[in-house]
Image (cartoon, rainbow, N blue to C red; front, side, top):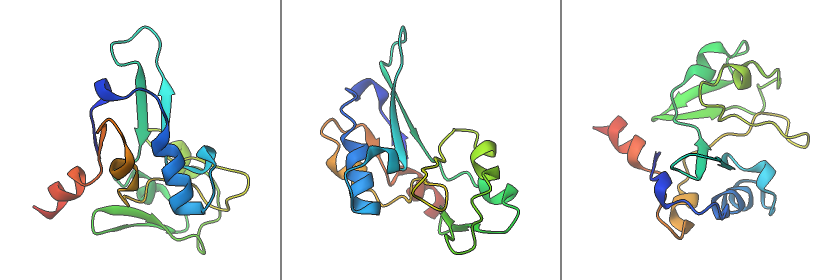
Length: 132
């Protein structure tokens, strides 16, 4: 995913779209993307989202995380929710929620980019690089 942070207004629509798409509810705490305010910086907001690097898959003690066509996927049935992947993520892009039995991350569905009113997100950018 490529980001144009200068365009972000912090509306957090991406978080709402993500939670509705992946969990069927309007709960931004269940989104695989986070918008956080940054004070005293040029970019007023930071968007935290998985860059599909695979570090989490490398450290998963039960093999519940795998790379599938350039996208890191978590097998919810195998995951023990131990949190090792959350701690290892270099971007802080794996999130936990008490109602979800596995870490939450971007699944590269592209819905956030589709609905972003400012064009901050390019969800397919990283996948195009993998394909080429």
